[in-house]
Length: 426
View: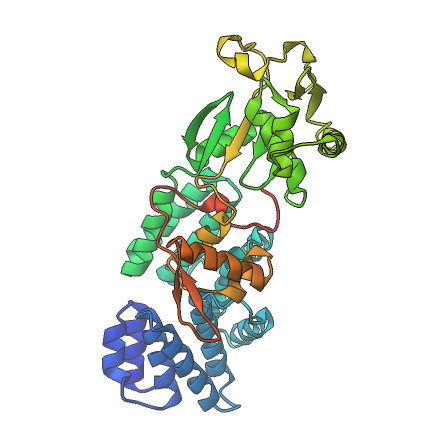
């Protein structure tokens, strides 16, 4: 390695992309192309960075397996920044194994962290946590330690373990200060600020209030019957009943929970669940069937009892004698020992909340990556993006075969609970 290559590499480690380009900006040999690609990535020129890294990988011969593996890792990180999530993770895993075998522990760890961050973007929190448990960043550079702790903090946040997230962010802040990389410091500061922002809304007996992530965690651990509008299910303590794939049953559960401790008129339930303003006998028969299905599913946590005008949700093993008509909530006292029924709502409403949360990270997402992260078809994502663009909530970048979507940051609250998750919160 000549002196200019070594100096450029040191500049990139310190986050000085311009300094690196001054040293190798005019060179076309593979090591210089690789460093130029990394420098362009740090400057946000991701398409140019990918091109340079590909040229560098092709330029290294078969006997330069270590250098080629490093290019693969750098290319994977650029692809992650571009939200190109469609590639096979096997290529990155093979590069990590090569780096580990050649005693390049730092770049091998970088490859593993990239894989963990990709899993988090796809909502596979449990897999990300398992992969992260195998990562040992001790004894490595402060910048890598900071990235590892940021990944640990995101896993904790997505799992609603706020104390663990705070501890990981404190360690990440300390490592970022030792690394003296401004981008890392800014990323840690943004993650720490998310803990103080509203993350959801709670609705109990008609009263709504904003909740931070730690307050959401406390609510879910309180034993209250929570109809979770963020993950679409019903929870009481450690018991979780997912209803994400049964939207009609969830709509009925939410309507009953919002009316608690009162009941809900049958016609109102029909309008809420079946989206019709003119109910007939077929709708009423269908309502009885769906209420029966919901009653069987939530039986371990609550009861659904018929009232004179509709149905009411009764948490736990309470008797139905305390049911209160909805129009008399303001004058009816609530028993002090009655288990609470709380509706947990996302900070923003709408069917595209998860889509907006992904786009609000400041990166330009392709429709294929959004479809992969959301578990939806690409056509469904394209239709949603058209609607959001018409409402001026999303901006399209590029009109060719691979358009990308970009949204302004959703200021004022955190989007942790809006992000998709392959598994329910534990």
